[in-house]
Image (cartoon, rainbow, N blue to C red; front, side, top):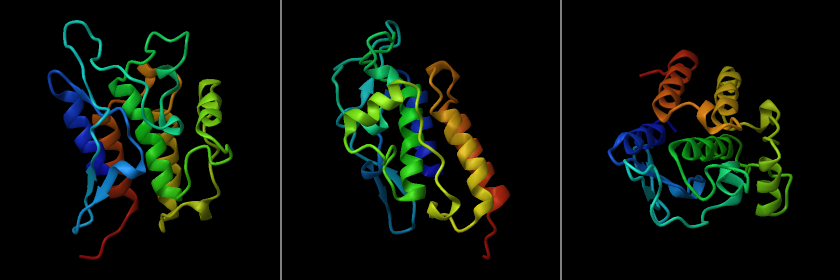
Length: 179
Protein backbone atom coordinates (compact mmCIF):
# COMPACT_ATOMS: atom_id res chain seq x y z
CA UNK A 1 0.00 0.00 0.00
CA UNK A 2 2.95 2.35 0.36
CA UNK A 3 3.20 2.42 -3.47
CA UNK A 4 -0.34 3.80 -3.58
CA UNK A 5 0.35 6.33 -0.82
CA UNK A 6 3.42 7.47 -2.75
CA UNK A 7 1.40 7.82 -5.97
CA UNK A 8 -1.31 9.82 -4.20
CA UNK A 9 1.31 12.04 -2.56
CA UNK A 10 2.81 12.73 -5.99
CA UNK A 11 -0.58 13.56 -7.52
CA UNK A 12 -1.59 15.80 -4.62
CA UNK A 13 1.68 17.75 -4.84
CA UNK A 14 1.29 18.56 -8.55
CA UNK A 15 0.23 22.10 -9.42
CA UNK A 16 -2.66 22.03 -9.89
CA UNK A 17 -3.14 18.94 -7.70
CA UNK A 18 -4.88 15.87 -9.06
CA UNK A 19 -7.44 14.35 -6.72
CA UNK A 20 -8.36 10.74 -7.49
CA UNK A 21 -11.86 11.00 -6.01
CA UNK A 22 -12.80 7.31 -6.34
CA UNK A 23 -10.38 5.30 -4.25
CA UNK A 24 -11.36 1.77 -3.31
CA UNK A 25 -9.77 -1.68 -3.55
CA UNK A 26 -10.99 -2.37 -7.08
CA UNK A 27 -9.00 0.63 -8.29
CA UNK A 28 -5.73 -0.86 -7.11
CA UNK A 29 -3.89 -3.22 -9.42
CA UNK A 30 -0.92 -5.40 -8.50
CA UNK A 31 1.86 -5.87 -11.05
CA UNK A 32 4.06 -8.96 -11.50
CA UNK A 33 6.56 -7.68 -8.92
CA UNK A 34 3.85 -7.14 -6.30
CA UNK A 35 3.73 -3.36 -6.61
CA UNK A 36 0.43 -1.60 -6.06
CA UNK A 37 -0.74 0.55 -8.98
CA UNK A 38 -3.47 3.17 -8.86
CA UNK A 39 -6.08 2.96 -11.62
CA UNK A 40 -9.42 4.36 -12.79
CA UNK A 41 -9.03 8.09 -12.87
CA UNK A 42 -12.50 8.56 -14.36
CA UNK A 43 -13.63 10.63 -11.37
CA UNK A 44 -10.32 12.38 -10.73
CA UNK A 45 -10.39 16.13 -10.26
CA UNK A 46 -7.94 18.83 -11.20
CA UNK A 47 -8.05 21.52 -8.55
CA UNK A 48 -7.89 25.12 -9.70
CA UNK A 49 -4.97 26.68 -7.90
CA UNK A 50 -6.51 30.14 -7.61
CA UNK A 51 -10.15 29.41 -6.92
CA UNK A 52 -9.60 26.27 -4.83
CA UNK A 53 -12.60 24.65 -6.46
CA UNK A 54 -12.81 21.55 -8.56
CA UNK A 55 -13.92 21.02 -12.11
CA UNK A 56 -16.44 18.47 -13.22
CA UNK A 57 -18.00 18.16 -9.78
CA UNK A 58 -20.13 15.07 -9.76
CA UNK A 59 -21.45 12.71 -7.17
CA UNK A 60 -19.53 9.58 -7.93
CA UNK A 61 -17.61 6.83 -6.33
CA UNK A 62 -18.58 4.35 -3.68
CA UNK A 63 -20.36 5.61 -0.58
CA UNK A 64 -18.50 3.29 1.80
CA UNK A 65 -15.24 4.97 0.90
CA UNK A 66 -16.40 8.57 0.55
CA UNK A 67 -15.39 11.15 3.12
CA UNK A 68 -18.51 12.31 4.99
CA UNK A 69 -17.99 15.96 4.09
CA UNK A 70 -18.49 15.23 0.38
CA UNK A 71 -22.26 14.85 0.61
CA UNK A 72 -23.04 16.57 3.90
CA UNK A 73 -25.48 19.45 3.48
CA UNK A 74 -23.71 21.39 6.23
CA UNK A 75 -20.21 20.94 4.83
CA UNK A 76 -18.03 23.54 3.15
CA UNK A 77 -16.67 20.67 1.06
CA UNK A 78 -19.94 19.35 -0.36
CA UNK A 79 -19.29 17.74 -3.77
CA UNK A 80 -15.67 18.97 -3.59
CA UNK A 81 -13.05 16.27 -3.51
CA UNK A 82 -9.80 17.23 -1.82
CA UNK A 83 -6.53 15.57 -0.84
CA UNK A 84 -8.16 15.04 2.58
CA UNK A 85 -11.11 13.19 1.01
CA UNK A 86 -8.64 10.96 -0.87
CA UNK A 87 -6.90 10.30 2.46
CA UNK A 88 -10.19 9.21 4.05
CA UNK A 89 -11.00 6.91 1.13
CA UNK A 90 -7.50 5.47 1.19
CA UNK A 91 -7.92 4.58 4.88
CA UNK A 92 -11.09 2.68 4.03
CA UNK A 93 -9.26 0.99 1.16
CA UNK A 94 -6.37 -0.09 3.39
CA UNK A 95 -8.89 -1.51 5.85
CA UNK A 96 -10.51 -3.52 3.07
CA UNK A 97 -7.18 -4.80 1.78
CA UNK A 98 -6.04 -5.74 5.29
CA UNK A 99 -9.24 -7.56 6.27
CA UNK A 100 -10.78 -8.60 2.93
CA UNK A 101 -14.02 -6.99 4.12
CA UNK A 102 -15.66 -3.84 2.81
CA UNK A 103 -15.65 -0.91 5.21
CA UNK A 104 -18.85 -0.83 7.26
CA UNK A 105 -19.50 -4.46 6.36
CA UNK A 106 -22.29 -4.49 8.93
CA UNK A 107 -24.39 -2.28 6.63
CA UNK A 108 -26.16 -3.94 3.72
CA UNK A 109 -26.16 -0.96 1.38
CA UNK A 110 -23.89 1.91 0.41
CA UNK A 111 -26.14 4.74 1.56
CA UNK A 112 -26.59 3.25 5.04
CA UNK A 113 -22.81 2.94 5.34
CA UNK A 114 -22.33 6.55 4.25
CA UNK A 115 -25.05 7.76 6.61
CA UNK A 116 -23.24 6.09 9.50
CA UNK A 117 -19.97 7.77 8.51
CA UNK A 118 -21.71 11.13 8.24
CA UNK A 119 -22.95 10.68 11.83
CA UNK A 120 -19.35 10.20 12.96
CA UNK A 121 -19.40 6.41 13.12
CA UNK A 122 -16.19 4.78 11.95
CA UNK A 123 -15.40 1.13 11.31
CA UNK A 124 -15.07 -1.03 14.39
CA UNK A 125 -11.65 -2.56 14.81
CA UNK A 126 -11.90 -6.19 13.71
CA UNK A 127 -10.38 -9.03 15.70
CA UNK A 128 -6.67 -9.60 15.01
CA UNK A 129 -7.44 -12.89 13.25
CA UNK A 130 -9.53 -10.98 10.69
CA UNK A 131 -6.49 -9.07 9.44
CA UNK A 132 -4.70 -10.68 6.52
CA UNK A 133 -1.39 -9.55 7.97
CA UNK A 134 0.75 -12.36 9.37
CA UNK A 135 2.76 -10.05 11.63
CA UNK A 136 0.36 -9.07 14.42
CA UNK A 137 2.68 -6.31 15.64
CA UNK A 138 1.74 -4.34 12.50
CA UNK A 139 -1.95 -4.19 13.40
CA UNK A 140 -1.79 -1.67 16.28
CA UNK A 141 0.27 1.00 14.48
CA UNK A 142 -1.69 0.47 11.28
CA UNK A 143 -5.02 0.84 13.09
CA UNK A 144 -3.78 4.03 14.77
CA UNK A 145 -2.84 5.47 11.37
CA UNK A 146 -6.23 4.54 9.89
CA UNK A 147 -8.07 6.34 12.70
CA UNK A 148 -6.09 9.49 11.91
CA UNK A 149 -6.81 9.14 8.20
CA UNK A 150 -10.59 8.92 8.65
CA UNK A 151 -10.74 11.78 11.15
CA UNK A 152 -14.07 13.61 10.89
CA UNK A 153 -12.52 17.03 10.28
CA UNK A 154 -10.72 17.06 6.91
CA UNK A 155 -8.07 19.54 8.08
CA UNK A 156 -7.00 17.12 10.82
CA UNK A 157 -6.24 14.25 8.44
CA UNK A 158 -2.58 13.67 7.59
CA UNK A 159 -1.23 14.50 4.15
CA UNK A 160 -0.44 11.59 1.88
CA UNK A 161 3.25 12.41 2.35
CA UNK A 162 2.85 11.79 6.09
CA UNK A 163 0.74 8.69 5.47
CA UNK A 164 3.41 7.26 3.20
CA UNK A 165 6.17 8.00 5.73
CA UNK A 166 4.16 6.32 8.49
CA UNK A 167 3.42 3.26 6.33
CA UNK A 168 7.10 2.88 5.49
CA UNK A 169 7.97 3.26 9.17
CA UNK A 170 5.39 0.63 10.15
CA UNK A 171 6.77 -1.75 7.54
CA UNK A 172 10.44 -1.16 8.39
CA UNK A 173 9.92 -1.28 12.15
CA UNK A 174 7.66 -4.31 12.32
CA UNK A 175 8.40 -6.59 9.41
CA UNK A 176 11.47 -8.70 8.97
CA UNK A 177 12.65 -9.79 5.56
CA UNK A 178 15.07 -12.57 4.70
CA UNK A 179 16.88 -11.48 1.53
